[in-house]
Length: 296
Image (cartoon, rainbow, N blue to C red; front, side):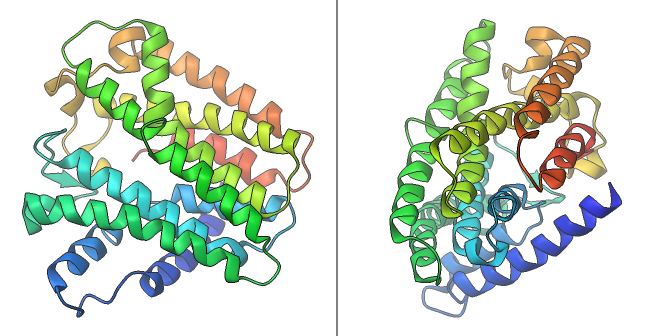
């Protein structure tokens, strides 16, 4: 696990350096929007999604540095979603990763616009991947199409809509899985798919990475649900119990903690099996265990 964490840290350093280059300078006019974008991007985070892009590309034989534009663009999309999730009209959270949320520093209007800006700027950054020697421009177009779908009304947005509309209501297992697949797993699936597509994976390999992404995306969300009940506030960086406060539907209130942990175990086994036929799969297999055991 120590080796995995060292590699994740090395990837994070690459991503943070590239993000700094791809984001507009905060001294540009009007500086408030650029400061808000940068504040949210550099407020912490494990960079799981860009790491998935990079390490998947590497598994298929491509240098991780060659997919940095796509990795950074996807992190911008993820950050936009967090800014909007934290707004008073959504989850109304004052802290994220131990720091005040964007709207608490810059106000609701600028926070909303910072999210909008990151979402749109992300696709400009992803498009730059076609300038990298050895990358197929058609593959970049496919990635843009896939990530647009993952982050739009057929993906993350629909998951968030279901999350909002189901607050305080009893929902069945099928709708819970749909919500979490769209809200969380879609961008994770898109990250893996993007790394594989840029590296030249075939259709069967892309489908397998998609299925792997669905499993670990659900693992990620269910673990979040558990941490909201059992987690340490200092480690998480925000108060626990916000899902209960906001009357959210989670795996905990539908299945209970024990069964939720059992579901994670089953998903982990299924996820690892999907990678067995791939060479250089060690990182992604170890990452499954990291996602299960994470404390924040």
